[in-house]
Image (cartoon, rainbow over all chains, first blue to last red; front, side):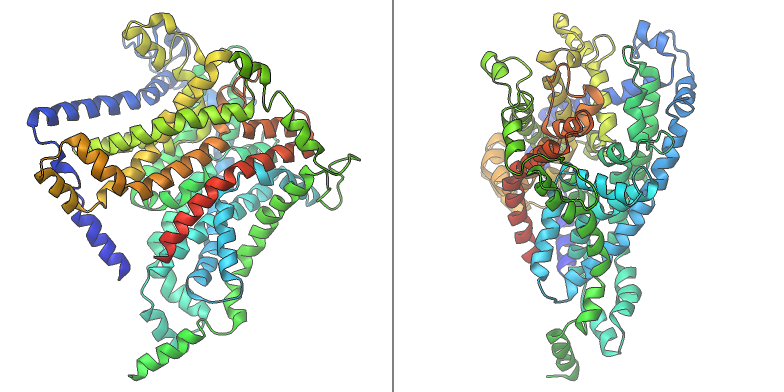
Length: 298
Length: 318
């Protein structure tokens, strides 16, 4: 009920402020300026891409914007992917190995917890909820030293499993908060009828609530996946074996000590950002929905 | 009262069946959160006072319990550099750098985000421009840091190309390698990355504004700036509170960008709190002091977190 009316409100107000500029000349100027800003804004990305697909020698002499001598090559990508010290191909796979379970585990556990917060009453519920909210804002730095020694004790330091556990735990508070809000907007009637028919909590949750909440679950999963893929700090602290490093962790190490090979770095950057960009483009609707809940974690 | 109403009422009284069934939903998630988030937070606080919180390892050695670590940090030149502050030269210390970061980044990103959000409502294909600007939020911040460094490169950087174009070529240099410009380069770069965030939140806020109010203002003959100042900005106040709180938190926690581009250099000129914590951990292997830096960082975020939490809880209860 609450949600449908909100959606209606949004769609009705969609044109928003379109009437604000009345003179057609002003409108034209505003449009041109906006597009110029838009193009200038992504120029660094264009530069990065141009640098990545040509020999760095050429870029260094003529600049990435010159099109006169333009030698197309994928050598930078090859060198980045199969770098002898920090192979980004390996990093790419490691990032996937870390990010997939670090998405599935917290989404399932947080969905269960979120349902409890949305529908059940239990002791100290409000305190727990406020705690979850607070944990969403805690800096990673505040937790990492004890985690480092705990994982070391458990022989999980420098392992995939250790990093996955940390990422999963770190994701639970915000996903719980996000899905709690999602579940509380669902109509209660269906669940009540099922309960009258004698369905257990578990049956109600998995058979009724979960299927209708799929969009919310996907939103949470998309954002959690992108967050884990993009994360750098936890990996930096908990993984030190070059064979297990994730892609974001390898990137800064591709920088030489004195001479920066931007050809190599730009290709590596494009590889590292390709996955979150793909997720953003393909699952745009879900990405934007989950975005507000997740932004807190940056 | 119909039978269904009666049953429903009865159910509401004891929602969810026996307590055990209700809390089993909660337990698995809470175990992970308490093990890897709550306990480490508490342990970090203990550690910062030289109390050993981890069973089986002596992390602190035999240093005395007390505020000694805090004293050491607060008087350390990497935290606050009085010489730098007096002479207005970098480095000024991590805490000052974070404050400068907020002082420049926050107003710029909020104002640019708001103006663009309003502007793009009237632009054909505005959503495309919005998506392009949002790209800075999608990519890993490590890539963001590298992009900033590249964009400020003397020969290849977009910024310096632009400076040469408008006749300010004498300013062109690799900004990130000089103490006096490194921090500013990173801050400007972070405006470029983060404006996608403010723009998106403001755009959503504007889309849900009551259209009638603005139409009424237009009919009354109010100009663009009057409507912006007197109608739009006041109506968007809740969005602004969220945007400001989250931006400050992001500025305080900034790490990846700095690590990727300058590593806090040159000579500490772009050192920030989160990186200082890391440098005590990795470089000095002084875990207790590192924990104290983390605790100070968290303490600074708390007032902002409280404002944000009040805001959020109000939204939840409505």
